[in-house]
Length: 101
Image (cartoon, rainbow, N blue to C red):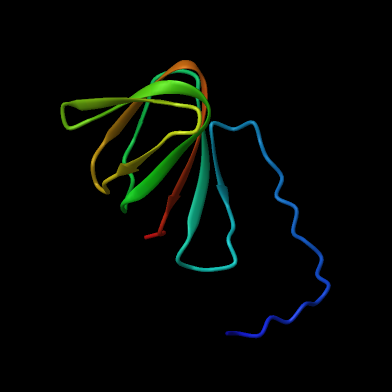
């Protein structure tokens, strides 16, 4: 068992923006969190293996001749260096987690 030390801290409030893509600072180097808003078809190429979580909406993701439909609450593993095309059926908010390059 490890001991936990409880100390009062002041949380860092993360402010959202209305830009199509927003990166969030994390207290560790090995973690990159992004919020991507998809309203019109977009394409992006993750640099590393990435987990994508659909926070709201639904859409289709295509890569390498294959496609998958994801809706709110679902996630997908996206391999790095592969172009991903995304189309939203309804306004789509997607969070991605990966390691920065």
